[in-house]
Length: 253
Image 1: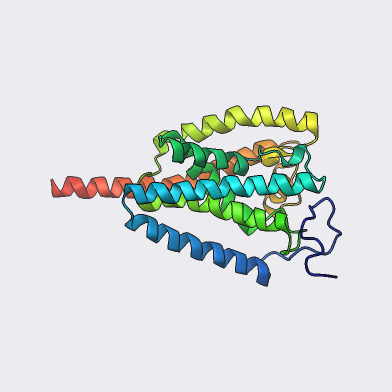
Image 2: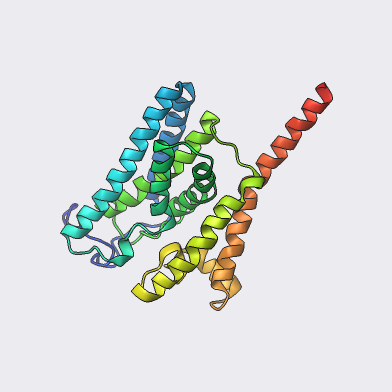
C-alpha cells in the first residue's frame, strides 16, 4: 500500500485494520510533541507583555479556525461531509469560545475553556475516537492538532495569570452544559449524530466504562456524574491553594 493512499479518506471510507494502537509509538510521539509545544508556548506567553500575548492568542485562534476549515474542505471535496461533522461537538464549539475570548476578553469564556476544553482535549488525546485512521491522513492530523491547540489555549490563560479557577464560577460551565445537552440530544435523535457523545460511546474506553457502570439506561446520568467528578478534580486543588494563601496572609497580618 502506498503511504499516502488514504491521505484524504475519512473514517467511513477507511478499510479496517489501518488505524493505530493506543499508546503505540506514533500515538506517544504525538502526545510528547503536543506536550513540548504547550510547554514552550506557555513559557513564551508568560514572558510577553499584553500586546505579545494578544498576538499569540490571535495566531492560535486563526490556526484553530483554519484547522476546522481544512476539515470541512477535505470532507466536502471527498464527499464525506455529513451532519456528523458539523462543529457541534464540545471541542468544536470551544474553537469559537477561544475566538470569542481573543476578540473580546471576558470572564465567561475562560471558565468554559477550563472546565470543558481542557479536560475534553486531554481525554480526546489520550483515548482518541479516531484510532481507525492512519497517521498519514489529514483527518487524523486535524484531530490531533485541533485537540492539541484546544489544550494549549486554556493553559495559556493559566500560565499568564489572566484566569484562575474558582468553584464560585462553576455554575457558568454547568449552565452551558445544561442548556446545550438537551438541544444536542434532540438533534442527535433527529439526524443520527452523536454530539457530546450523548447517544453512544463511539467505542471509547472511557465512555464504555461509564456505560458499563451505569448501564445503557442510565448512560447519560453516568456521563453527568463523570463530568462532575472531573470538575471537582480540576477545581478543588485551586480552592485549597486559595485557602492556604488566605491563611498565610492572615498570619502575616
